[in-house]
Length: 94
Image (cartoon, rainbow, N blue to C red; front, top):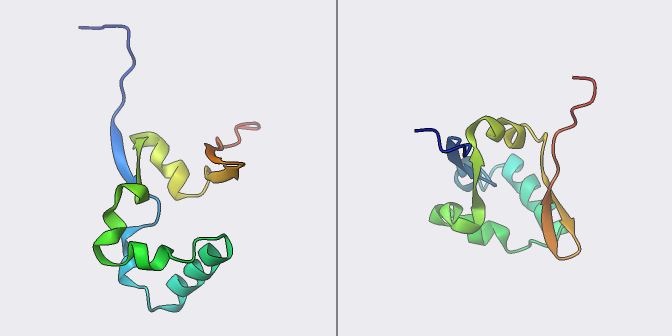
């Protein structure tokens, strides 16, 4: 039955990937934590270690075909005063 309402498959997406919690002692992870500390998130490594990576603050729901834009950094979060905003991928020239 077509109700005229668009539907889409959605998926749970990690903002910081699960793998980051497992490699916290490696140089790659350390540089990520350094950048996050510079941005004001000094306590992030402690919050995301182990099962903390699975908290609701570290996941979001995206439409399945849109997920790739987030994972390839074609969309991202930008701090705007006191809120976050999604920046859509550039489409000119496509």
